Length: 224
Length: 217
Image (cartoon, rainbow over all chains, first blue to last red; front, top):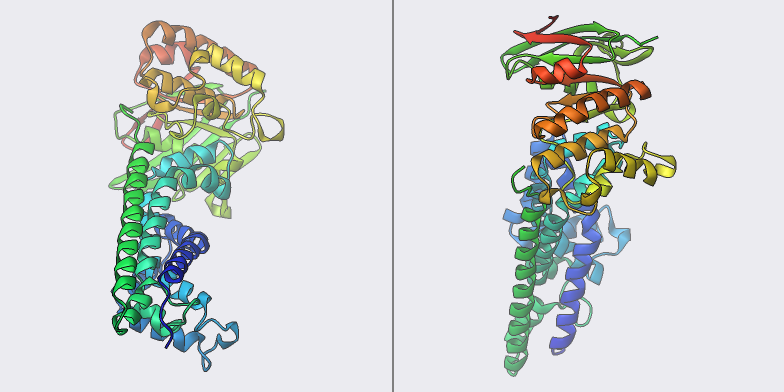
C-alpha cells in the first residue's frame, strides 16, 4: 500500500465536495420543491426515503450502492465503483438528506402567496418558480449546499465501500487519515489533514450561517 | 356593451359553506361583509387561486371555471389582477421591477418604460423606483401593488381594501382617477372594502356577503 499524499487527499476531498454540491443542486432543489409545495399521495413516503441515508450507517448505504452499481448489479455498465465518480456519488447520497431538507425548509418559508401574485401577473408555474420561489429561497438553498459540502468532506463509510481507497483517485481526507493511522510515520500527515478538515468545515459552517441569516432577512418586510 | 360577469361558485372553507352567486354588467362592483365572511376568498376564486371550487365563473364569452365540464383556467391565463390586502410586493426586487413584473406589460415581455413611469407618477412613486419594498410604508406598498396589477393589463381587477393604508387626501384623489382609468381601458373591478366612501366614489353596484351568500344591497 502506497503512502497517502495529504495534499492530494485535500484536493480530492474539495473536488468531491464541490461536485456533490454543484451536480447535486438540480436534484436537491427539485426534490426540496416537490416536498415543500407538492400535493400528492406519496409525499410523506418520499420524505422518509430521502431521510434514510441520514440514519442508515453510511457503510450500509455504500453497500446498497455497490449492490446496485457493482459488477453484478443492474447499473454495472456505468463503471462507477472504485472511481472518482463513485466517491462523489457516495458522498452525495449520504449528504442528500441535509441538502434536500435545507431546500425544503427554505422554500416552505416563502409565503405561497408571492407565487400566487406572480400567477395572476401572467407567469405560469415554471416562470414563477424561476422568478419568485428560487430567488426567494436562494440563500437558504446556498446554505444547504454548504452543509452538503461539509458533509461530503467528512464522508468515510459509504466512500470506502463504493469507491475504495485509491491514492489520487478516491482517497479523500477521511480515507487518507485512516490509512495514515496504520503507517508508522503517518503523524505529520495526520495532523495536516486534521487541521485542514477543521479549517474547511469551519469555513463551510460559517458560510452556512451567513446564508441562513441572509435568508431570514430576504423574507423580512419590517412592518408589512 | 358591458360584458356579463357571472359567478356561481360553491366551496367549503373550514366550517363555512360558501355559495357565491353574482351576475353583473356593472363596471365596478363592491363587496362588503363582516370579516371572515369570505370576501377575500371571493376575490381568490375570481383570480383562479382556489382550486376546490364547484360551479361556474365567466366574464363575457370567456369561461374561467366550469366544474361540470372540468374546465379550470389557471390564474396566469385569466388576466385577472389581484391586489391582496397586504400588498405582497416581491421583497427581493425594487419598486421598479415590481411594477414592471408582468410580462404582459409590454412587447417582448418587458414593461413599456413610458407606461411604467406614467403609472409611477400617477401613484406618486417616481422617487421610490429604486427602493426595495422593505423600505416602503404600508401606503406606498399598496400603491405599488395596485400599479403592478394595473400594468399587467387585466380584464378584471380584484382589489382587497386597496386604500386602507393611504392617507385621506391621496385616497380622495386616487378613487375617481382609478375609476376613470379602468373605465377607459375596459377593465372591470371587484372591490372588497369596509370604507363606505370607497364604495360611494368607485362602485356602480354594491353587494354584500352574509352567512356565505352574496346579495345585492
